[in-house]
Amino acid sequence: MKNALLLSFFLLFSFSVSAQSSLEVRGYFGVSGSMANWNEDLDGASSVDIENVKEVGVLLSKSISEKFSLNGGLNYSFATVQYDPNIPPCFNCLSIAYEHNLDFKMLSLPIYAEYSLGKIFYAAAGPLVDFQLSEGNNFSDQSGVGYLVGLGAKLDTEKLSFSIFPNYKRHNVIPFEKEGNYKQILQELGVQFGVGYQF
Image 1 (cartoon, helix red, strand yellow):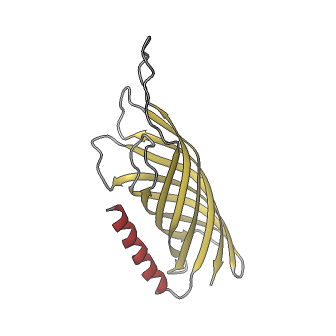
Image 2 (tube, one colour):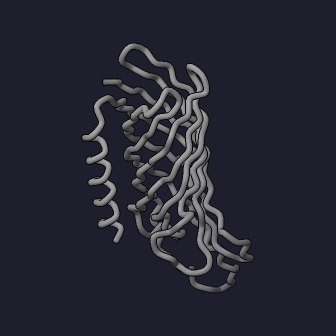
Image 3 (tube, rainbow, N blue to C red):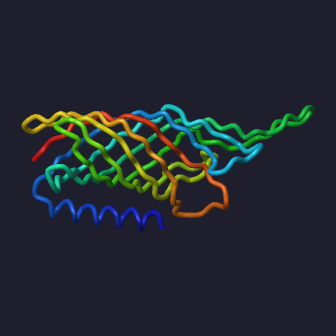
């Protein structure tokens, strides 16, 4: 199901891009602080720390009016996951072994609108479609629909643009597959640095 959804988004995105005449292509790199909390308070539940979150991506942007533009793209995130299984102490017991994959990887399709707040600043918001690529990270699969909001600044030259975009992301708001009544939700507070080319 994930592969079918991913293919559908790529086809839809390719069609919309081919129908547009003037575009900006923006590449970016980002870093984030993050946390993955349970959607409800659970006593004695396991916990994870998501560390060193980084992302790279490319966006296509199309102005639809003097103030509004639409953006869509492809984002690849990677991080390190530290896992605390919260196993109670057991004296004179053999150590309890568990499998854990430290490497977290996710592919996202951000689709959001930008609203200009003057010549430099802008606000942005829209959905994220996420596909978690890694397995065995010992927290809820983040594949699903989330959202992004942020306030950024962009400086335009004749053909190039330079941007900084502080943003908040919340993943797994609507999961593709329900895993029970409880789930962990990955949240990020980060910043992206981008360079764009207008044509």
